[in-house]
Image 1 (cartoon, rainbow, N blue to C red):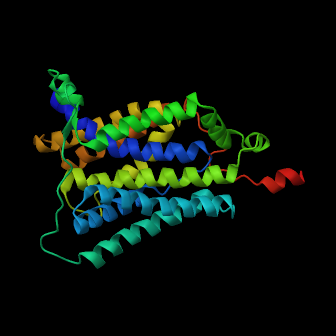
Image 2 (cartoon, rainbow, N blue to C red):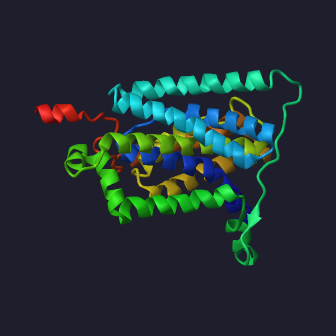
Image 3 (cartoon, rainbow, N blue to C red):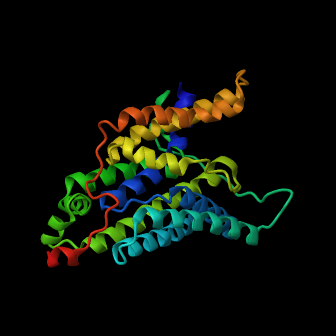
Length: 307
C-alpha cells in the first residue's frame, strides 16, 4: 500500500497543476481547452531548456513563461477582441502541438539515442520523512509534489477566504456585478488566463523531468483532455480537484502496474482503463457538478452601458 501511494502522489502532479490552472482561468470566466497542446509544449520547452542549461528549475520556469504567453493570447483575443473562447482554445492547441514538434526537431533532430536530462531528486522533509510507513508515502518526494499540494491550499484560501478571491470569482459568476463594484473584469480575466496556462505548462514540463528524462511527442497521452474533465468533476473548486486527481492518478498507476505484472489482458485495454473510468465517473458527476455561470462567455462592458 505504501509503495502504491508513493507512486500515486507524483502521478497526481500533472493532473493537479494543470487542473488548478484550468480552474484558475475558469473561475474568472475563461474556458481554456488547449491544455493538451500546452502540456506537450511545456514538456518540450522544459526538456530542451533543461538539457541546454543543465537546470530543471530553469526549464520549469521557461515552460511556464511560454505557456503563459499562450494564455495571454487567449485572454486578449477573448476579452479584448471577444472571439469565441472554444475556437481560440482549439487553435492554440494545434499551434502548441506544432510548435513543440518544431522546436524539438530543430534543436535535436533525428537521433538513434535521444538526449537525456537528470530526473528530479527527492527531498525528504526532515523528521516527517522518518515517520514509519507514512514518511515513505507522503514526505519523500520531489519539490513539485509538495508545490502542487501547497498551491492547491493557497488557491482555496485565496478564492474562499479573501475579499480579493470573492471579487475574482465574481468575474466568472456575474461580471456585471463585479464591474459595478469596481473590479476590472478584462484585466482579471487576462491575468487568470496567463497564470492558468503557466500552470498547465509546468504540468507538462514535469513529465520528462520525472518519468523518462527525455521528450517524446506522445508522452502527455491525453492527460490534457482528462484535466478538462477533472475541472468539471471537481466542480471548479481547488479542494475537490485533489480528490479527482487522486482518482485519475490511481487508475493510471494501476494500469501501468497491471501492464508490468504481465496480466493476461491486451495492454491496449489496460491503457484504456483510465479513460473508461473517467467516462463512467463523468456520467454521474455532471448531475451535481456546478460550473461558473459565465464560464466560456465573453463580457462586453459596452453592451451593458448601451442597454
